[in-house]
Length: 124
Image 1: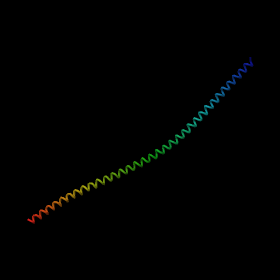
Image 2: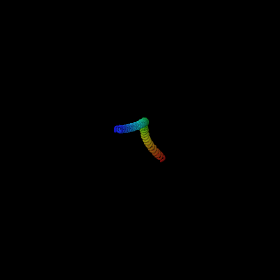
Image 3: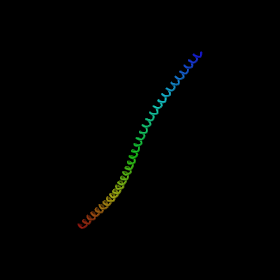
Image 4: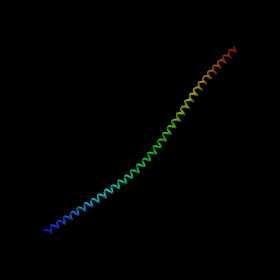
């Protein structure tokens, strides 16, 4: 009885050892799986960081371009306003000159009529 009992205990212990070894192997596989996942995530994180930096550089460059375009637009608007102001001034001067020309033409016509009338009066 004691021989069969001890062989039973040996088989039981061997089964426990096997089960423990399987658990250990499974645990090692699990750890390796998580290590691979951590490496993948680290790699992805690095890629994401590089992309973020690249995009931030792009944003910075675009913001500089926007500032430049805004400044150029403001300068163009100032120039347009200056030209518009000059145009208005020249238009005003032209209107005044046309008015003076009309007055002068009227005076000339008046003088012609007087001169004609004076010529007719002499003839009579």
